[in-house]
Length: 236
Image 1 (cartoon, rainbow, N blue to C red):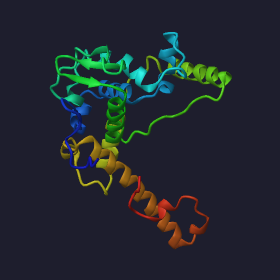
Image 2: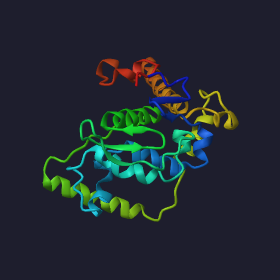
Image 3: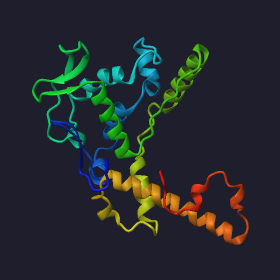
């Protein structure tokens, strides 16, 4: 899946994921990343809300979590991610052919079963360079500890004003010599291109610093565990 020149990715007939621009996202950043999080997060990342509903986050699958979240978010405006398709009629159905529980939109004839969900979630992760969180506690004590720790973290964060993460990245890159865009032209970049540029520039800066140390004799490459810093092109 080559996303560098794509403006959207077709998941199944009648359902495609848009790759919005930096400017589009900045106009509604908090809401946008809430949607992205809802469609890409694992139960581990939703442990507190699930616990509040009496659900053990270790006993629910990613697809079951998605089935809970998607119909709720589908009632709001998802056009920035899915275009002009009206997704508000999605509901849980039992597929007659195999009795599997699916999400279905009669209006658009779109069925999201578990394989389609994984394709959708993986696509959104790829667009935003998000790594899938696979953590799982080893025992009940660890589960309880992690839940209490996350609940305390969320309590501390509650009520704090939203700070734009994307805006900080834009400011940082525009003021970096390796980035050839100004504020206006940066707004037109698809978010995938923007994140890839950010990642590559970070790697290039690390490479330059490493090479400076090599030439100065302060960095011994034979002792380096991460050899990626010896190549200026990021392989992530």
